[in-house]
Amino acid sequence: MADFIQDRIWLSTPHMSGHEMKYIEEAFHLNNVFPLGPNVTGLEKDLARFTGAAHCCCLSSGTAAIHLALIALGVEQGDEVICPTFTFSASANPIAYLKATPVFVESEASTWNIRPTAEEASLEEVIKARIKAGKRPKAIIVVHLYGMPARMDEIMRIAAEFEIPVVEDAAESLGSRYQGRSCGTWGDIGVLSFNGNKIITTSGGGAMLSNNKAYCDLAVFLSTQARDPAPYYQHSHIGYNYRMSNISAGIGRGQMEVLEQRVAKRRENFRFYQQALKNVPGIIFPDEPSDEFFSNRWLTTILVVPEQTGGVTNDDLRVGLDQLNIETRPLWKPMHLQPVFRNCPAYVDGTSEWLFNHGLCLPSSTSIKDQEREMVVDAIKKMIES
Ligand SMILES: *Cc1c(COP(=O)(O)O)cnc(C)c1O
Image (cartoon, rainbow, N blue to C red; front, side):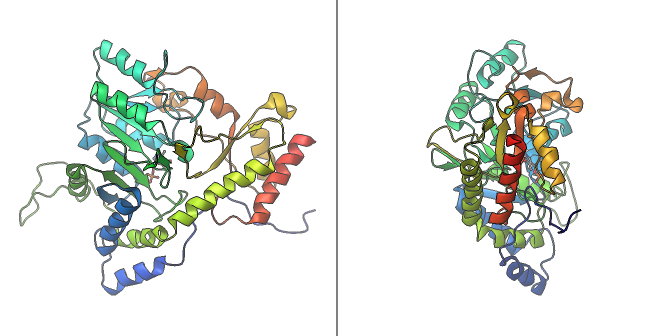
């Protein structure tokens, strides 16, 4: 039947700038093929300059950065750490690595991120409830999901009131800003990811940001096996092999040269889909709540309301698009619904579950062609209008 073969349209693919090889060749030339070197320090400088963070430490993944951030903040076995329920599992897994307990908190409907204040199922109320129960949370993890900034001013005010440190998981939000200030620089420690599907990539990698030099110094120490200053290998701490390689960092330096363009393109993808689908009933695009919010629009997300689409659901769209060789993905399944976290405390009211049950991520690569985006739009229109 098919008389042409069409390449698959992917959700989010790596997109090289063409400048990466320059840094990698230099590393080969100098034989700097190990987990430190000029590209690592260069990328750290690039990231600090771009975000406005005072200090940066490049690591092997965003997950490793969250793990070291929690260690730096003193999280230990038996502690509780607050985490949004609506996130990717890598936000919460490092809590479990430390044998601490995640306490999951509901999203607000406007940003989909942790709800700062409300009668219940909000950050403020959950902190009060845990303190009342004799368990003061040791840290708060905040996530900027799909690039949309969380309400950091309110979150930092609450955190300061209760004197609880904040880890900002900005893995999806490099290039996003709230009130003009970069995501990842509001909390005590910020975390970035350069996995292959993120806005820029090092093929795999992450970073810690902080205005507190001690946290980044500790991350360098722990990520390189925690060697005491001695001519032989002596250890007073358990170390990790979490440092970024100088080759990966070379890819990152080439990617940093085009980060602004990548953010502009992701935002343009969002505007294109929103405009092209604006007359389709039952498709909702999550707007930035005000001009205080600047999202990198890492992935364009939609909500599909079957009561208005004539019964077509988010999953109908996913399956239909897949048959046309177009990759889409459900939103993150909330952590309180994950079998592995089923016994953890969760303060929820159905908001994130509703989002999960209605949402879909559309193809959002920066290398996507106009014609490919139009195929996505045409397919969605056909499915809903037929
Ligand atoms: C990708 C991601 C991470 C983990 O980053 P890795 O570099 O893949 O370990 C953490 N949190 C969120 C929200 C992410 O999307």
